[in-house]
Length: 94
Image 1 (cartoon, rainbow, N blue to C red):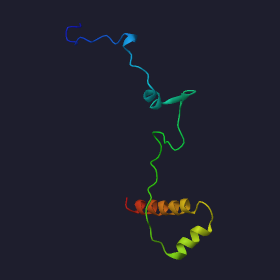
Image 2 (cartoon, rainbow, N blue to C red):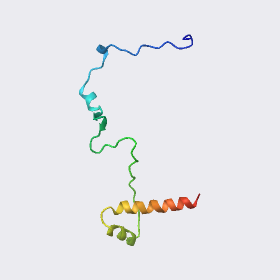
Image 3 (cartoon, rainbow, N blue to C red):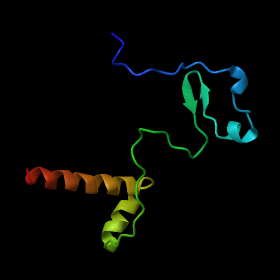
Image 4 (cartoon, helix red, strand yellow):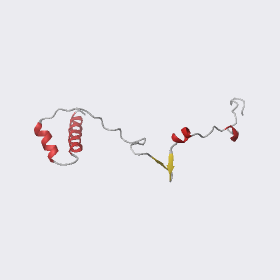
C-alpha cells in the first residue's frame, strides 16, 4: 500500500546541471589516499582528544625545579602527576 506514503522526487539529476569545478572548490576539497583522509600539517582529525589548554600557573620554585630537572617532557610528567591526584581525589568522593 503506497497510498499513505508521500511522493518522492527522483534522485537522478542531469550531469550537465553539475556545478563548475573552480579553484575554490578544489581548495576546499578533502584529499583521500588509500581510503584515508590526508591531512595537512597542523590539521587535527575528528575524534581525537581535544587539544590541551594553555594556562598560567604559579608553582613553588622547588616543585618547578624538580620537574624541570627530569629533562625534556617535564610538563607532560607534571600533567600526569596532577591527573593522578585528580583520579585519587575523585575515587574518594564516590
